Length: 402
Image 1 (tube, rainbow, N blue to C red):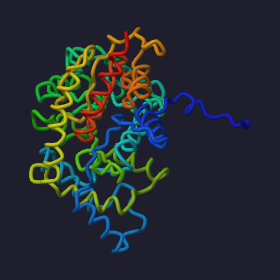
Image 2: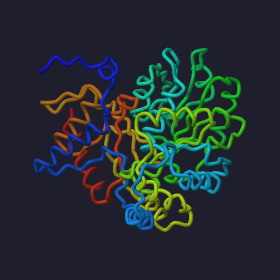
Image 3: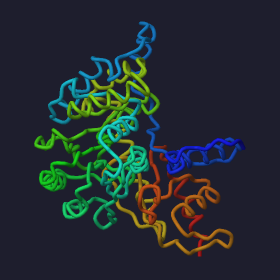
Image 4: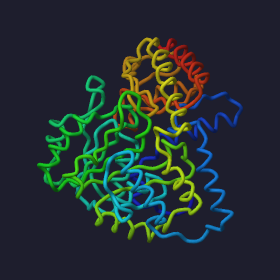
């Protein structure tokens, strides 16, 4: 090795656990091992035909030059129209900035609003990247722990107790990755009442799984208009439109935040791929209720959820909550802690995931990365046949732990 000294910033950053497990499963597959990967949150459907064609047309029309930093005017206008159509929210194209996926969109916001010592409240379990994004911006993540009994959702009382004079922001997702929990309108309203008492707190509402809900229609934090001057809505095309590889995310936010994110993005990535923006523009025109492709995907996810939930419920030692959205199971697995098959002893969620990868050839992600070491995350964004086989393998492997 050379004498290169890396920054404290990168040394203090955790590797993405979801991407790490996905890479491990790909390496085993490359060796010819039949691995069922339930580790990554990616729909196994293809991008809608109209969106694909729009991308092809953009290439043929030579739409291949530098775009505006915040996104093309047409796409930003279409996003504003989508927010009105699907969520009843009033935004203009000037309130929106398009980024390289929701990941960059969120990171831009934290870089724009967080200073050293500022606290950002994050309900646990959380999407793996939230705390690392906060730390990248020199902020301090503050976690609110939840339990399966409360369906992994925080209460207004917990939120109130977590806010301090150092609290700068709050971020959560609904539907939630990894738990699949969905906040009701009443639950969001109770949180909004707390935020009203603390006008210094900027609220980031990650609604990327908006279309993937099974029991109720999506309730956006944006409906509480009294919070609009400090609310950032995060969304994108990856999950609802099966467009993960196009890398398009966006925020709708107060103009000061949009302007700051535009300034940041202008320095380190500039505008987003024109081809991807053209495809996303076509996707934005698709109403979820009227799109056969979106409804087909939602129906498949619902069927898989119901089937996989039943199969996992039959496995001794797993404690499950039925998810109301997204495409993840987040079973509690702590009953296996301290058990062994004679070779491997399970001490935490990562141990169990590595054990399942090794013995069952099923890839999943330890709950520790999501802020709850007593659970594991299993994605059911794959075929029913693979889910059935995965359940059989998991059940057999876990039965050997005594």
